[in-house]
Image (cartoon, rainbow, N blue to C red; front, top):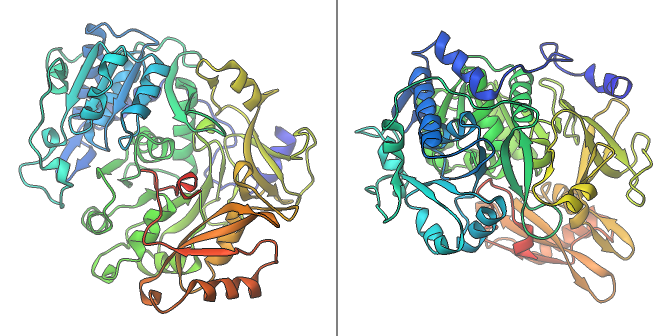
Length: 546
């Protein structure tokens, strides 16, 4: 790695170490903060504050309680909540008990939940009362022995400082044959506990990811890899104990988990937790708490910085804003700089399999237009698509491969898919990109989303980037649709900016495309939408558009 990495390491910020190691599990770094600064605020939740000491004690109680209930090292424990203090407590409590976190998407329905519970072999479930009805539908088909439920209402202040989501205002629901999460914490005395024996071998996460085909697969993430990624993120962004992190990006998702929860707590920062993304509430939280750091999906930034009354909020406290996964229009970037003038805008590319930070990231202060950034914790190379073996020279498009200390061990109980994904230590991402002479990487598109039009390869992201240059386009997603003559053709689903609605037609967009894109790239169809289907992490779900 040394020779290849040296070309991009020269562009790393000066404060980022070229080499480092982690010597203990993630939760024990958080314990260090609690012992040195017990009164420092760790979490703010709609006006209720938790100190590092209170958080650390609750985590120890959770871990001791789970062990008392029979949870053993290596057991998989399902965690099924929106963002809330209980998620943080349960997450680190599961880790300290030696068990493995299986974070389940709170938007999932019962059939999706059943697959992950069954595949992981989870016997313990810690969840939110308002989400449990979907689990109840399949309880007789999964082998859950312990079910602990909590409510957002349990951890709210007497008077909220911010508007609450509807589910937070509901009184706690009770269900038969379930246990109270609060009682789990109260039934044991506070004593330090950490049952992790081998950071490299003991799993921290079974993090489910769609991968390239089929049902979601569990990426096996060790305690060492999770800790290394969290520490690396803190170093890259130069986290300090005065940082106030806006934690609205979902914790169940790898980006939110590492960047908005684990890394901030590793570095002694403060989390402002919101259970769901509502632009006006987010703006109020930023104004009230002076948030300095936010790692967010592009759709969140678009929604926040497009608020019609944005000038009424104080968003000037941001030190950096990081995003990834889709382009942000120049207009939105300009809006960010207008209302958050000190914010360094950072782009990122990562996978569940490379634990978010083990991908590509913009060096703070050295943005290169059109490029995501440079590799950080892992090594990256570009190989030809046909054989997957020939490393390509700078400027040539091929598949992105990743290798290094921040990778999954493989897919849970799927040896064949693991062998297909990891070859000679290199993770085959399934994504297309190119690298320039400086080691900067440009993300071109996803191999599986590639459109073959008249024999040419068309990458939806490239077409989307072009369409964002049209002044009427607020959001866009491009997919391939069957075409009798060309095989496939791009189709664009577009959300118009408010001022252009009913003033512009699909034909106007198509004519603009004819003037601005190569014939084979331009969309033959355009459909205006009021909204685009998105995951809870804010990613556009193109499979639903297809």
